[in-house]
Structures are given as structure tokens and as C-alpha cells.
Image (tube, rainbow, N blue to C red; front, side):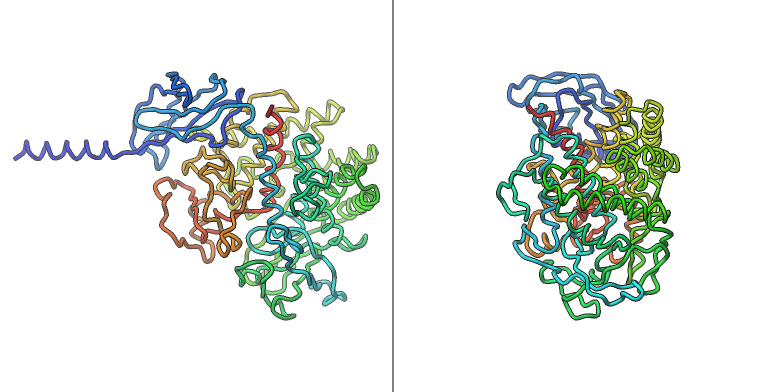
Length: 588
């Protein structure tokens, strides 16, 4: 009987081992020939991996490699390993095998990112407010009526245009101005990679202007409306009462007190806490918002100077005025909520004024602006989320300090070295926090973690290009690869990138949910700490959690009902344009 029991125990152990699974995660977009190329293997049970095989799918030729770094057990996985195949540079389609695990097919080649830079612009067009070219319909044409504006309360203003912030229909200066700047910057760094396939109104056609500039101008024209005169700056359209409606934007029937589907409230930039109900923000100044006005207007004036001189002159004048208003009103200007405690809790502002100042210096060559940019930059040498375990929602925004990068481009070597050191310090903090993580992921899993990841890749790429220092190239590539499937869930985080990839198919968006429209190019929020997911109002899953076995301290769900991890964001999507533009520039 004892022998029989022992046999049964051994059979049980064998069955458990036989049922244990392993997975190899690869970048589903592919790898450039000179990339640091690392796949990550994750295993349910501990498994010694000493080698792996890379096979060319077309030729059948295989190469056995021993460049394996055992990363040990990392919850919930019994074993993990980094499989380095960097020295394979021949163009082609490949697959990796190790033990019983086999990766998806992937490509190596100079053109693997060709055209990828245009895909985020599809989502930006889908997000347009006013006339929406994707839906060929108009929405929110009555925006709006001023609130919390003293003697101007109830005044009708015209602020139609811009973009919806995410899958709701609110509009924020904070994120929209950042989106404008990101697209303008992406264009200036790689002007030759952008196509002209759409008209200014977002419909198909050619107008002699790269589509990224059409999109940036759409945002700039809205920002001009949001800054109607030298002393007036608007910060937000609509509020969280918007969430009562989930349908097509043209059908929005929310009643803000002026009739169902009619006018929406327009909030001013305010330097003190405000809100229409018991929920108040913690605003302390104007500089974060008006600084964003200034930097976007400045760069816009430079880009459009040869395209539309009158428009450029308007932007130039508004940039100078906004800068002085920000200089006189330091502090952060936050967004407003009404029926819930959720708003953008931005509490830093010196980064916005630093960027505004260096753009003013570039526009005028007045040394005063350069000196002030340096002074503002020294107030926040490192963006505080870098190396942190957590943060409030949009507490440190924008997530990447572009002012540091522009100061690191200066001819003054002392300034250049100082701000390169600051950029490096942020990268180092994230790498230190990653420690021995198999994915090299050192970014906090807060709401919109993918936006932080995009910011990190942008900073790492700019630092490498400006300094020539390749010390952070492996983590730069690892975080790029994270967005394209090298993560525990094997999920690409950008809809339709790549077209044949495993990307979000059930995103939190009524345009998808009601009409089945794919949100091409939209980057979803990304994984969050389980504690965040479990604490947010109204969160649930409407489908089975097919990723349950891959959750660790963080969770991700490709599920419409999970607005914390699977909702695309406009500003995060716009922030993809720089690094995708750089990658597209590698194509032959």
C-alpha cells in the first residue's frame, strides 16, 4: 500500500510538472538590426534555461545561443530569464524556442517601424471635438458657458474644437497643450518622416502639409480660443457629470443645467482651490497651465512661420504674454471635478515654466529667458515620479521634462552638462528601482503607467542622442519593447500596433463599444497596482479575466469595463510621436 501511495505521489508531481507552462515574450513590432535584442521567458515552475534557439522562419536556419541571464523566481512566476540575441542582425522573420516554450514570430529589419509614426495620428483625428472626421459628424458645437468666473459667470463663449481627453468627452488645457507640444516637437526632430494623406479637417486628401502639423494646428487653434485675450485663460470644458452618458459624441445628452445636450461649462485657469460642489481641487497658481500655453504657442510660431505668417505672429505674441502671466503667478493650476473626487492632481509647475522660458529664448535670443529657464530647471532637477513607488493621478505632469532636453541642446557647455546630468539622474533612478526585474521595469504602476513608460523611452532616447552615452540603451529598449508585448501579459499596449499583434481588442471607449470602431493608434492606460484597481469607483470586469495567471503586484485587463488599465488617452498617444518618428527614420 505504501508503494502504491508513493507511485501516486510521483505521478501527481509528474502531472504538475507536465502541466506547467512557459512563455517567451518578444517585441511584436520587431527589432532594428542594431537594437539591443532581448526576449523574456517566464515560467510557471522553476526551470533551468541554459540556451535557446533563434530560427529564421524563411530559411529554417537555426542558431543556438547561450546568452541567457537567469532572473530567478518573480511572483507569480516560478522562473524568469532574459534571452539576449543582440548579435543577430540579418533581416528576416524569426521565432525563438527554449525548452517547451516558443515565441510568436517577429521581424528584424531597418523598416520594421516604417509608417508606425502615422498610426497615433489616426487616434488623434478620432478624438477631435467639434467636427469629427472619423465619424463625419459634429459634436459639442455649443461650447460653452463660463462658470466660477466671477462677474462673467453665465457668459457664452466659443471654445468649440480641440480633442476629447480620453473615452469620455471632457477637454483639458493641461493634456491638450502637452499633446500639441509633443507633436510639434516630434515634427521638428524628424520632419521628413511625416506623410500628407489627410486634409486640415481630418478627411482623406492631400493639402501640402504633413498630417502631424494639421493635427497640431487643430489643437493650436482651439488653444487660441481658450486664451481669448491677454488676461483670460480657460483650463477645462465640461466635468465629470459627462460620465452619465456613454455613446457617440454627437448624441451627448448630458444636462449641465442649460438643457440636455446643450451648453457645457467652461472653467477658467484659477490660482486657488475651486469646484462647483464639495469636491475642490488644490490649485495654488497659474504657472503650470499658462506655461503650457506659452511653450506650445512658441514652438507653434516657429513651425508655422513659413506656412502661415499671420497665424505664427498671433502665436508668438500670445506666447510672450502667457510666459509673463506664468512668471507672475507661480504654482500649479489643477482641473476640476463635481460628482467624484477624481481630477488631475498636478502639483509641479517649474517644469512648465522652464520649457516656456527656453522656447522664449529660442524665439528671441534674449539671454534673460535662458537664465530663467536654468533657474526654473534647478527647482526640479529630476521629474519626481522617476524612482518613486507611487504618485497621485497626474501629480507630476508632463511625465517627461522637455525643458531639460532643450537645455541639454544648448551650445553653452556648462548648461548642457548640467541638464544632461539631470536627465541621466532620472534614468538612473528608474533603473535602480527596476533592480533585478526580468522586464527591467522600474516604473510605478500608477494610473496611466504606459504614459510614464512612453515618457521614459523619450527621455532615454533623447539623452542617448544628445550625450552619446549608451549606458541606458538596454533599459530604453526594454521599455519600448514593454509597450509592444514584452510584458507579463504579452500584450501590445497601442491599438493596431502592430496590425497583426495582440493589442487591446476590448478598449474602454463608447465609440468602440457602441459602433465597433477600432481605435487605431490609441495607447491604453496600462497596468496598475492591484490596490488601485480595487479602490476605484465602479470598476468591474464584464468578461472572464483571461490574464489572471499573469498578474503580480499589477493587473491589466483587455476589458471594456476596466477604465483604469484599458482606456486610451489622447495625451499619451500624442507623446508616442517623437520616439516612433525616430524609429521610423531608421527605415530605408
